[in-house]
Structure formats: structure tokens, C-alpha cells
Amino acid sequence: CLMAVGAIPNTAGMGLEEAGVRLKDSGHILTDRVSRTSAPGVYAAGDVTGIFALASVAAMQGRIAMYH
Image (cartoon, rainbow, N blue to C red; front, side, top):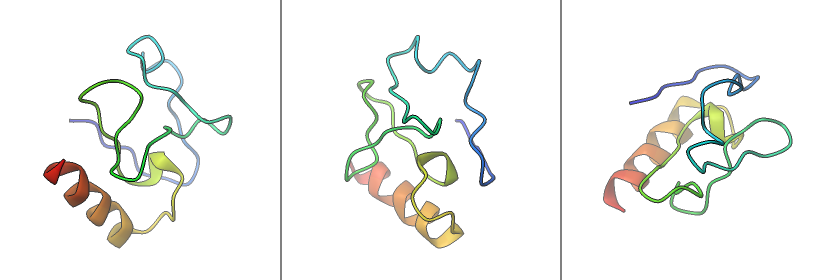
């Protein structure tokens, strides 16, 4: 489980790109509509996606990922 909190992503040096997870130019993790990343079986939710840094949005992204 990976949790990232904050307005500025700190994804450098985590091995995400080596794992096949694509990042946006801003450093946020690139996801689709159901929180999937570019790496099979890897989902991202919350501030690290760069989509509305709100707890309610993060919770919904997590629930969506859980059902997919």
C-alpha cells in the first residue's frame, strides 16, 4: 500500500517509472477513469493523481479502484 498526501507530488526516486507507471510532467501519476495506472494491476488514488486534492475525492477514487 502506498499513500501520498500533499499538494506537490514527491514521486521521484520511488521506482514508479521502472515499474511501468507513467507520470505526468507535473510528477503526478497518470490514471484513467477508474484509477488504473499504465502498469497492470497498479492503481493510484488521492493527491498523487493531481485530481482535486480533497479527501472525499481520494476516498471515491479508492472505492472505484477497489471495484475494478
